[in-house]
Image 1 (cartoon, rainbow, N blue to C red):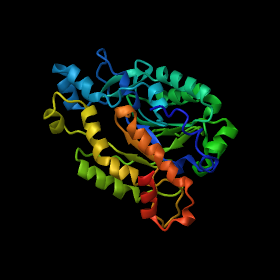
Image 2: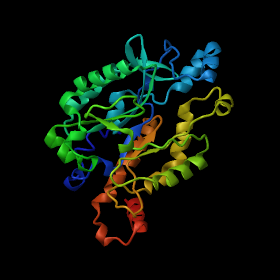
Image 3: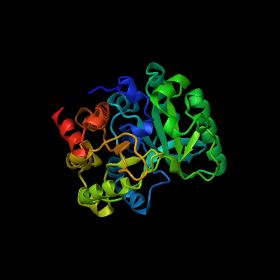
Image 4: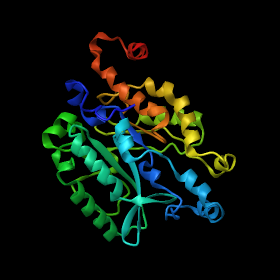
Length: 325
């Protein structure tokens, strides 16, 4: 299902809300679709992965992939939040997850072309992890990213995230929010720090524990922050060893099936201190499953905000209306 213009198509009252108050689909380890038969070990590979890769490199590459659709396909499905891991190798920057994927700016060219033809869409790039990078490497990457996106970047000088609405972004001609985590140097004004958009890691291979973690960790969200709910499992060595012929895609299918009831009952939108926090970004593996059903569930949550809340008695009424649509 194509949802390439879903932000543009939101009603004006929702386009006036900050993007941290919208429900936004995100893809975990976005660029791992670029892993192929030539991909070599990356510096983030732990000892177990290196041992497996020595004898079964195809097996390692298979389990390193979290996505199978390209950046353009993900954008057309409605993904607007992209989770990235970057490693330096021989003076160049690459995406990685155990093994190397493509060079950093290769898929960003496609992203920029999409933004050129979709001026009312806004994306968030979350630079999650860095490997084998010195301070000069960080400085180089910052400079290249700022030059690449130029005036598209919604900078910290443009105002707080609470003011970063789709309407304001269109007025300023901004389309990209850059988050940079775990950086050893000060950030340029074009980058947002980690605390502006928390993304708690569930770190579990249990669906039951994942569901509890998502509900409990959301309670820590602050009204002025963005927030990421990571709807995914982290397989252990034992989990993988018992599923040698499987891939993460099979795990993602199970997560989608089990988490759908929790996802569709959530509510985005503004909230105040002392009120129950609301959702923002949902992160998932293999966002293209069943024609992007995960993205559809998340985007549809925004329709709850079109109702006049003053006419509703509480959250049960929201869920009743949503389930009957």
